[in-house]
Every structure is written in structure tokens, then in C-alpha cells.
Image (cartoon, rainbow, N blue to C red; front, side, top):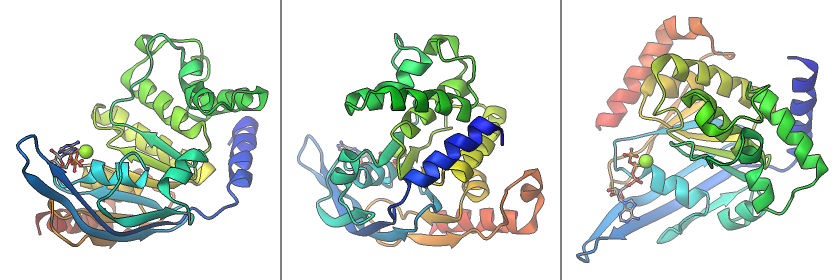
Length: 271
Ligand SMILES: Nc1ncnc2c1ncn2[C@@H]1O[C@H](COP(=O)(O)OP(=O)(O)OP(=O)(O)O)[C@@H](O)[C@H]1O
Ligand SMILES: [Mg+2]
């Protein structure tokens, strides 16, 4: 770790004094179609996530993963049930800038530079001052984009755009980082290097991470625990603890336990 990385990581760790434990209790959510048909998507979903835990959520397409992430981040309300983040409601956590959200599509603003895109949440939250400006430079370093702060999104590769999106989510120093298939659009090589970069960032800044992926190997490689969601409207989630040693390296993938865990995730998927 170089000197400026160390300075940045120390700051994040010091700022993170409150517990960011997440409790998801009996969440139910249905959607009503234009024809008035009501479909239950989430049926009494319950789980807990510890402070600084890295948890992946996997499950069949349409089972409600994005819906659940939106409920946890306070973007939509459940029909019933409760979410707390460090004891606060999702809305309060969003208000206190405790949640960073990385979408599948980096969704950068094309006429803003890398620096300006990363700074956007701070401006929206009316926190633009010199202290935060310094943080942006540190974040650009942290995500490996030194020298690109004045570039526009169209001048970046897909992986670089996704790193800007990650830095933007980190700009508010979130206690909880929510990532919805963030690497889905990337090629396999870039995706692999993003995995290492994400783990490196997590080690330095230690937010709680909730990461949605369709890729079982990716979930096993990254996580402390995997939550397998049932198909839409079905009841129980399955928890799979990943006790592979950290740091995870290329050797991790050749461990017998790595492949056993992938098979376990795939089997749970089919239940
Ligand atoms: N705003 C909405 N109005 C009506 N139905 C919706 C709405 N949002 C999602 N749905 C439906 O809810 C179900 C779950 O959607 P969601 O996006 O949460 O699934 P997902 O598990 O994230 O799927 P994927 O893995 O494909 O991203 C889908 O059948 C979808 O059509
Ligand atoms: Mg989704």
C-alpha cells in the first residue's frame, strides 16, 4: 500500500465508528400488473448481515434480487416487513449518506469528467467543500484511475467506467455498499481484475457489501457468505458460509473447497 492509499484507508476506517449491521425481517413485496394481476415476488425474506461482512446474493432471474436491494436502500417500500441498517431505517441511512449503490450500468453523466461524476453525490447532498474535494482525488487513486480525472466517460474503457461508478458510490463514504451485478457487462478478463480491485478496496475501507451476481464462482471468490434467494414468491433463503482463507488469490480457485462451494450454490439455485 503506498502512502496516499494508507492515508485514504485510515480516514475511511476512522469515519466508520457506527455499527452497520443490516437486519432484513419478513420482507414481502408484490407488484400489480397493468391488467390488475397481483404477483408476489418477495415472501417473508429474512436475514442479517454483520458489520463489514461481504455477502453475495444469487438467485434465478426475476426472483426479486433488484427489488430487494431497492427496498434495503430505501428506493422502494416493502408491503410489509422491516429493514434496519445500524439500527436506522433505509430512508434515514440514505439521508445520512450511509448507502452507496453501484448499478449494473455505470450510468455516468457524459458531459461531466471522471472527477465531476465521482463528486456528483456530494453535490447532490450539498456537501461540496474543500475537504470533500480532497477525498475525490484520493478515491481516484483508490480505484486506480490516477491521471484520468479530466477524462470524459466516452474516453474510458468499460472497466474504467465501472471503476468511476464504484468511486462515485464510495464518495459519500458509505457504511453499506450495494452492488447490483456491477460486472455483468464486462469481459471475463476485466471482470476478474475488477474482482481483485473490489476485494482490495473492501480490505482498505471495510464497508458492508451486498453484491448481486449470477456468477456462482464470482460469488464464492468474493464473499464471506452467499444468500441464495428462492424463486419469486417462494419463502426461504439458503445461507452458504464461505470459509476460504483471505486474501483470495489465483490459488483460491484451485482449492477443492472452492469448487465444492460452487456446486453447493448451484444445487441451492435449483431447489
Ligand atoms: N416496477 C415494477 N412493476 C411491476 N413488476 C416489476 C417491477 N419491478 C420488477 N418487477 C417484476 O418483479 C420481478 C422481480 O424483478 P427483479 O428485477 O427484482 O428481479 P431480479 O431477481 O433482479 O432479476 P434479474 O436477475 O433478471 O436482474 C420480475 O418479474 C419483474 O418483472
Ligand atoms: Mg436484477
